[in-house]
Length: 223
Length: 251
Image (cartoon, rainbow over all chains, first blue to last red; front, side, top):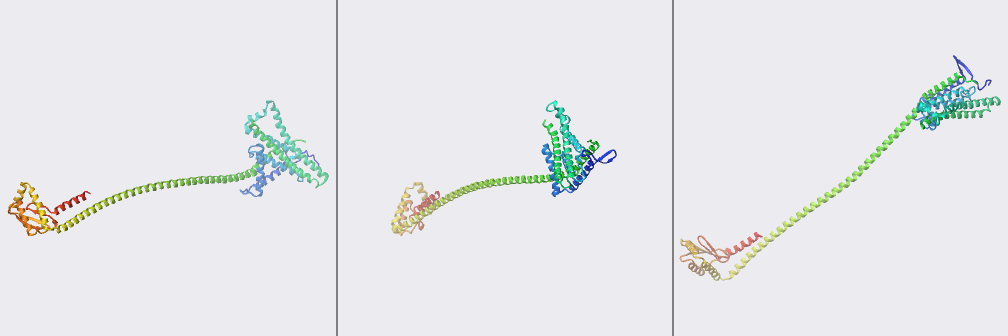
């Protein structure tokens, strides 16, 4: 643990592009998730076995959660929000593995996710109500609120990013300190707690993204 | 702390790719399977609902048919009862007519038989009367009976007008024979008395013959060549019998 936890470790370069450990870990997570999905869904049957039933419960659970938050059919947002939750859980928890750093513990990954959420919110808003109709909602309830609303759009996305980054990074930082100070087995409860924190943070990030998207769709409709 | 923009871009692209791959290999297959199962369930539900609707419709049809059958049965029974009543009334009317006709025929038969019996009784009574009269007459001496008949003949001939008497005499003048027929033969003395008194009434030179015919019962008949004068009971009885039969035919 000779480097700062806030620093990004560059593993190699692809031309001018530096490939950091977070990117490599993300690729590994992508490979794991895609391969696992392919293996799990290649032989789906009308009468599901346990694995298929679990998959259906997870997918439909996420879709139902999105529907409850946005009060609309959750399937259009399922690829974005479902992938967000699954990736965040995997990424947050993988930091507990020896020698692996969680991608979300570096600032670039939460920033990328926040950026995607930010773009998606406005994409769904514009698609649902048109550019002018969506832009008009920023001037409500009064025109004077326009700068504040725009600022709020940026700050809430920024807060999402910082919250995720801060929680995961701090958890890993504390866990590294405990391991360094107390030995190998003592930090196990802390690791369990860190896994729980990782799941909760993934849930919070996803739910906030769903709330923002639902607000973008629903606010304009209500108006 | 520094933001690595290339890592930021790579992670953004990575996430987008991951979302597409998971959509391709996770969400879409699972959702498709769930949709297929839901469609199958919905299809089964629709089929069940359709079967239920069909069963309900069939039940309604059966109920309607049953109601129709009941109504038809009631109408048929009603029609049959009306037809039976009409048939019974017709038969009763026919029976009444036949009974009336039979009674009329019986009445006519009885009346005819009664008339026939009455006529037969009259004829029997007449025959009986004739027998009784014949027996009673047989107890009266022939002379007495012949005198009465002769008086009656004389009285009749005396009552004839002249042209009629002359016509009778002319019929006898040409050699004609007057034949006197009686029910029983007249004694010789009585016959002579008859010759004398008939000659006085019809003229002398008469050729008189006597003959008998028990069918006359009593009295006598004068048979001229072209006419007969009847003073016998047979003629009276024939008149009575004719009157009785004429009465019977009228009845």
